Length: 353
Ligand SMILES: NC(=O)c1ccc[n+]([C@@H]2O[C@H](COP(=O)([O-])OP(=O)(O)OC[C@H]3O[C@@H](n4cnc5c(N)ncnc54)[C@H](OP(=O)(O)O)[C@@H]3O)[C@@H](O)[C@H]2O)c1
Image (tube, rainbow, N blue to C red; front, side, top):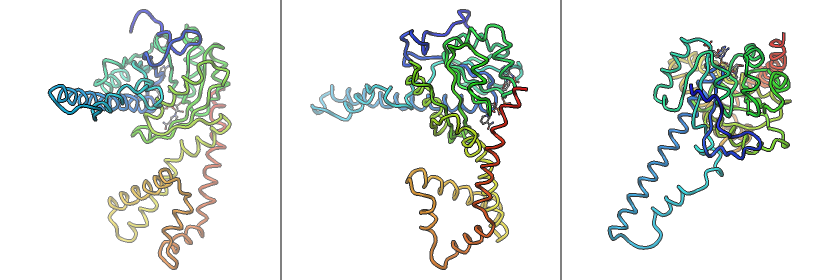
């Protein structure tokens, strides 16, 4: 790790720095979710850079053709070149708002060894460290707190120098149930704290993350918001919601993949009962659920309208739907979200003990 031990003067009030110059993200507690988020961000950077290189190569080859006697006037290459000049700050998924350097922190050396193998292809930008949270926080501009909730006090309060290392920095906690107020109590007043709740499909960049907004009084709120969107859009969709909605959103998006998989498996079971082989039944069920969900997201259609559009009078769909209603599926599913949200509201409080 660099001995200088301090972050570049970015994202800290009054420094005049800008994220476009590059910044460092430290992931403290780089386990399942940390790896998922880091991998998504790295994939996203690689894809954007490859696209830019391809466009630059196309533009340069066309310019070369023109200088060899091609037609005058604006050409495709000019359009491509102008695309390359576009101010990327207007694009929230822009690579410039993604970190340029990463520090992945774990506690055990064997975990660090494993992580180094995971990120071997990105060794030029990803540094993996064990038991060096304070040094990582010193060098970072943005810190993603991705350890287990019960480890947070240990790291933020008990580690010597952490309070100073996080001075004025943006800390984004993904720890389930831990309230912003609880984290603020563990850090310096100048540390800017937000909460994020990603979900497991982040691993395949199909996640849904909710984020708490920064207060509008924060002079860096707009820039921090764009940075957070860049990071979490790299692993799927993200949206800002007030913290009061976090328990409901945690139940819906965080626990939702488990609930959806129960429904998916049950649909496949029915088809297996009717003679379809298990493998095909699971494929059909999964693709059908994905298709229905994408129709809602991409067409903006209400789910009831999609349901009605596939329900022929007297047909098999209405026969199945009535069976679902007899089983009180709607209230069972809705109550499931309610129960999970009520449970989520107590989660962070146990870590206080
Ligand atoms: N999994 C999900 O679907 C999900 C969804 C949303 C939010 N979350 C939240 O994400 C957080 C992480 O969950 P996870 O499933 O990714 O857990 P995980 O796989 O167990 O990862 C925890 C990581 O923390 C590291 N760690 C432990 N003590 C540490 C310390 N003192 N300093 C630095 N690193 C330390 C561990 O490293 P070692 O291996 O070296 O101990 C491990 O890499 C939790 O707070 C959870 O509430 C999880």
